[in-house]
Amino acid sequence: MTPQLVIFFVLATLAIAGALSLILQKHPIHSALSLIVVMVALAGLYLLLGAEFVAAVQIIVYGGAIMVLFVFVIMLLNAGIEEHTNFSKLAGYAGVPLGIALTGFIAAAIARSTDTVQAATTGGNIASTKQISTMIFKEFVYPFELTSFLILVAIMGAIVLAQREK
Amino acid sequence: MVPTNYYVILSAVLFGLGVIAFIFKRNIISIFMSIELMLNAVNLAFVAFSQSKGNLDGQVFVLFVIIVAAAEAAVGLGIIILIARNRRSLNVERVDLLKL
Image 1 (cartoon, chains in turn green, purple):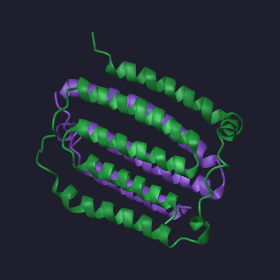
Image 2 (image 1 turned 45 degrees about the vertical axis):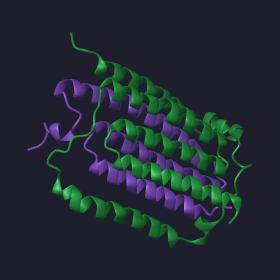
Image 3 (image 1 turned 180 degrees about the vertical axis):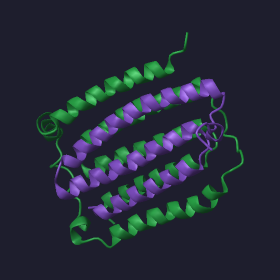
Image 4 (image 1 turned 90 degrees about the horizontal axis):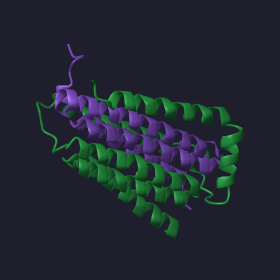
């Protein structure tokens, strides 16, 4: 067991525990806090992979901005414990087996994969922030500009949706 | 070093948990959060493959996924506020206008 492997298993356990907690908690605010645990654990995994910039963006944008928006909306709408209405029987009997089957198929496909996928991660030194920024502003400059347009449309859409009718 | 396999299997497990949460949650905000969980699981696979191939395309894609998720969160939460205002409930079982 190398130190990296120990850190990986600690963070992976934290992420899976957070995801399970998201499912099991009844109150949306508890689900939101569980999701923050998952996101911070994933940021740690990105650091372990040597992707510092993605880890920082994960913390700032996901943990900071998006989750604050979620918590804000939960408090704005005063969302309480989720009520149990007549639960769809199909979801109960087919949902969990199908979800587990999906995970199993993906995991089995990965486990049987060739050596190229199993190659150990190099970690560090290839992923500098400088190289990422060069790629964004050279190769991916048109998609990048399109995302700014997308954000603008999303902001206008959110304002139009949320404004009260006169 | 940690094999890439482990990261991708973790990503698959998180995605499966996201799917299960999406099916089982009744609160519309919790359903939205399970979508974010699935997006996060995909991002982990992107970064793991990017590092194992020594190719930075995956990390740039993750940034785009995060941008789109932020836009999606803004619009989606606007829709949620609208639903909560019109229906006085956050339960998806009560939002059945398109149901036969």
